[in-house]
Length: 375
Image (cartoon, rainbow, N blue to C red; front, side, top):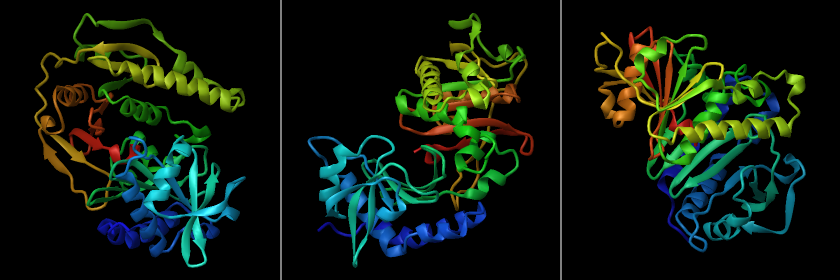
């Protein structure tokens, strides 16, 4: 028996209360409350998942997703003849069979004991889900009712507990990208689509770090902030992603259209691994990659940025952009200071992710730390 994971007991009542408030805030149906587990179940699942995350199966880190629901609440579940104990040993042994995205281990009470009863790929809206993202790194989320779409509720890393602040989307100058990641921008998710969110996830996934600049379509003003000649200018602009996004809803033939979108997103996100910045328009035309950002003539160097993270208790800071990272972060902040209509997405090799956007309210560059929303 492993010792108790202290953060599990500390966070369980907070998460349950947050879950209930979160459901109320977005107008969840009345029966959704039945999917919110009690604090004892939340604590037990977190505890088992944490210790499982620190173990290895033939040298591999277990990557599992646990959903707290009964077999009757799942759609076409796969049931084990003999349920498994909710313990790190059992979770690690079965992890290779369920590591693919979209497969959840179902956990529910059998009498007084929580047991792993099987797997499910389709789960109810607002179902409690706990994912093992890395050793000691757990993400609590709920299903938002669209294929593969989840909203993060909390992130646990060692003894650190971060509760997502759902009110962050209502702050002045909140970028649409942040609102979408928080799950409150319904228009951006129409049809399961938010291209910038998917690009951000894919940029972070390749692990090399990178920068993506989003500039207004039809304008060339951004060129004043780019060193020329551009190493990899794209002429004419590469419009495959834009064409896929512009298809009418009736032309989006389900899985095939989503696969095309995913491939186009991966292709552009992969370009951000090249030294320099990848540049797309706000209509998703690719115009360059490997571009070097330079200070616009006559513009002062960026000295400070406002930094926030959408977690409860997080306080805004005013810092020099180098406090966020190296030259990649500094150049992104400079670009946004010089180009108020632009936006910069920056992924670090260590997994941090920052969205730089101009804040008219603060009259300065605002750096939104969003890695907790991308896990």
